[in-house]
Length: 190
Image (cartoon, rainbow, N blue to C red):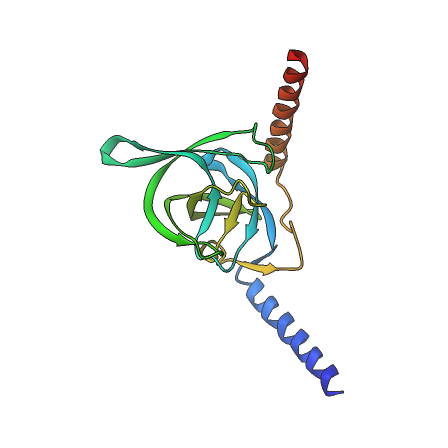
């Protein structure tokens, strides 16, 4: 009987806390979601929620620095927006905010460039810091760290609770059309 009541109390507490916090415009998301990085030209990219990381990270390669006007430095980089599709490349440019030494989950230390951009997730737009690193062998092109998750509750048993926006669906459709066009060109060439 005591075990039964303990479960009811926990459920009641969880419901009350969630209901009270929902008045603060908190949103529940899954452990992986589709996000947008509109100022980088990435309307849709799969991301994994990583509460163990403070800062978010984005897959990037061919990373170069460029001196801009007013002594500002920009980072030029490329992204493969879809896993296992190396033929799709989006070129990006962002203001360099910082350089940081980051320790990954395997204990490896790496100096990374840091940029700041707008992220859209579940209808919410917010400015986030992203470190740039090659995530080619990783399952997700982006990890979202704690500093970008302050308005969200994460349900680790769920995925893609936010769904895809119309803009994200169009972007992904265009990418698939680019892929099928490239496949058609390869067939004609052989």
